[in-house]
Length: 202
Image (cartoon, rainbow, N blue to C red):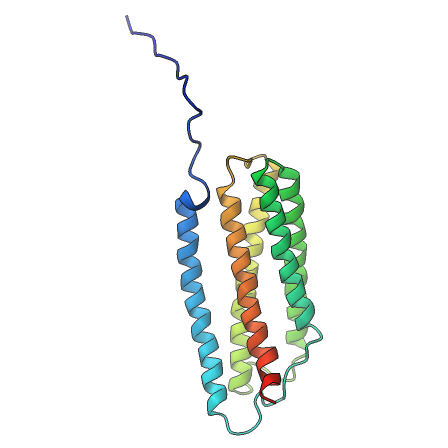
């Protein structure tokens, strides 16, 4: 006759690593480190080329701030909303995470729309000159990262609505928020490089 299995009376068993103990967290840090190096090389290319140019840089003059400033504010607000949402789920408030993620999704879509409008109004194409090539390449790479971030946030929104996360299980949320903060940080570099430095050199 099989002996009865003793019941477990200790503290609750772990349901998975969370935060900085999770493998996904370190994996995302590795991804961010790789992508940060890519953008660093792209920014270096821009500044190196600009240092070798004789004459006006950018060729068409400093780009206007009319769309770039709202874009910057939009991404900063998105990061703030995701921070608020993550803070809420850490306290077991899934509704706060749903609201924060939904707000960030809408802001991210608005950012991409504004970036598309700005692209369409540029008086040059990617093949016009080296500045144009660098502009479309760097901003295009960033737009691709924003799109990836929006897909991640959409998945998180669905999972949150299905009740996958709580105060003890939210590693995926922290990882997604980390990536979105990275997207915002890179845009600050893009904004400074293309919109601020030309004005500083005038």
